[in-house]
Image (cartoon, rainbow, N blue to C red; front, side, top):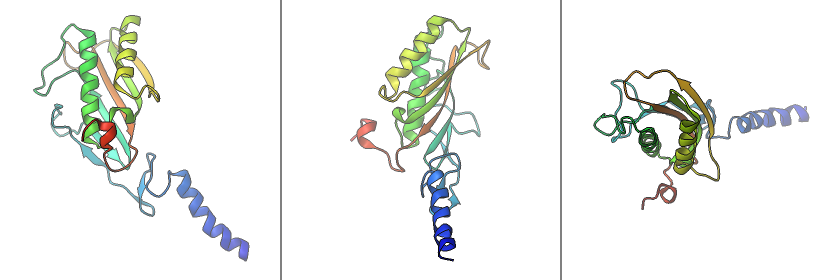
Length: 178
C-alpha cells in the first residue's frame, strides 16, 4: 500500500518534468498544473503583416514565426536584385518579431531558409548572415531549401523559424535595451 502511494505521487511529477516542468516548454506547453496555455498572436509594429494572419504565434515559451521576407515597414521590397540585402532585411524582420514576442534573435532554435534559384554562394551568404544575427555560441538548427519562385516577384529569400524564450519576461540585457 505504501508503494502505491509513492508511485501515485511520483508519476505525475515525472510526467510534468518530461513536458518541461510546471510552466511548459515544448509544443504541449502548460501553465500552472496542466492547463494548456492559449496561443498568443504576435505582431511586430515595424514588420508588415498579411491581413488576418499574425507574424508569429507564441504557445508557452515557444514562438513559431511565419515566413519572414525582405520588406520594409511600408511593405516595399528591400534590395531588389541584391541577395545579401534581402537576406539581412528578412533576418532583421525575424529579429523584430522575436522582440515583439519578448525574446531576442538569440532565442531562435530552428530556422528554415527558402532560397530562389539556390547556389552555393547564396547558401554561404545565408549562413554568414544568420550567424551574424543570432547567438554564435548556440546557433540554431538550419535547413536550407531551394525553391523556383515566391508569391511576390523579386523576392529571393524567406525565413521561417521557431524560438524558445528563456522566461515569460523580456531579457533587457540580451535585447540591448535599457
